Length: 208
Image (tube, rainbow, N blue to C red; front, side):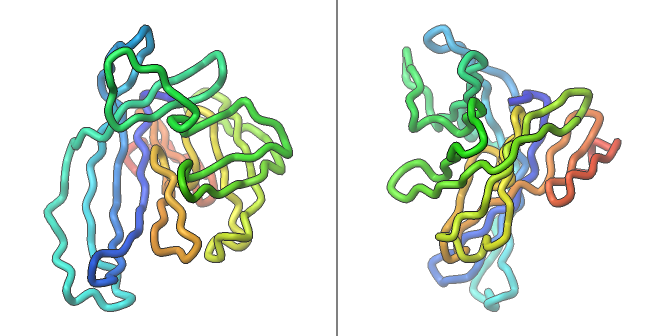
């Protein structure tokens, strides 16, 4: 993961009154901890939420925005081309497969998994290319949509090395009914911004 990048995501869920709540988040890395000879970058996020008009959320009162909230730790495994994420860091910790958020040691025909745990969704890689962003080429895996998620029919999910997934930055949330999702809107280095929708690159890093 490129530690200079800021990710902007849009996350949707439901509250107790079945109101759809949309949360706009920014994720970024600041500082690190050494644990068991591994560097763990600290992940922070700023976010605000609001009720979506459909269905009418008359009962939802939006809380004030939250800034610079600690979210967890990310660690790069450059040898195995993996990235790990943990919410908290026990002493002398060694990450496991359940901590893997990105695995870029893949080929066409391999699977990428989202939501490791009780409900896991599999996306099949059908193409690999690269994208030039901020002076570096980032390998990109393009996958075929999974038929078990109806609202993503025809949607091509991407996983980009050093950047993230079109499903989100750190948390990749999907629900077959579309009631809990996360999407990466764009990401920005100090000098450039890239939109995930069309992979257009803008020179203004503050547009994200």
